[in-house]
Length: 335
Image (tube, rainbow, N blue to C red; front, side, top):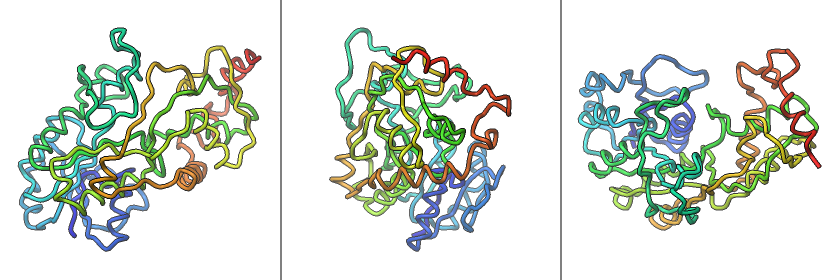
């Protein structure tokens, strides 16, 4: 099967290309061509920005692809620039579980006094009323909105996969770094808050296998939305303990009542759990996630061997020796 992968050079797209190759498919990567990360699989590349996607429309038609996966559709404009130039083949777009109303409660604590939203969330759960969750924030895109992306693909008979909190090799968000930077620095104690939050994670390899499951069942996947996440989730405190165990660290997680360092805020109190059910993906696509007992160590080992470029010593303080002053202050409040 020849599969066009839009954005196949980083994280999920990169893993998908590797997995397609491993099973004998022929991936073709479509990306901007601004960077070529080290270690990419040797596959055909087409270079184009979304804004001028029509420039490669003829080449895409000539390739006669069997399917297409869009791993980086972020805005309505970005989708509208691409879809008219795609052939009539099965389409899969990566979406996010941030589309749900519960995400606003989780992130902002807002729900007009109506209380916590019941979990696990499913594809039928209420989606956000407010659009553009990252507008005005320095790390986000003002026009990012998966709720604007999904309808365009679904109208073409495509499939939208709403992913949980994805972790794993090459993760640009480095979701485990709140623990691992302290492991690298040899910190014996790590302050944490209550750590009761439940959030559905998803290993990058399982995100890829969900895409493959949708590609392999186009009749059942067409026009459908699927939540995709791990089968069961520990609390954030339990997740931190998993990371420490995978890293072979004896560091102690110390509950503290006081203010937490910014990067440990995920262990604090939250008004909303973010648990998702993948029962629909299992029933219709036969998809099953891997066991975190195996996938967390895979991710941890990779991140320990590949520290952030700006934190080669794991401290992030530029050698000034004060990266964990906030940790020390928090630990002094421990009972």
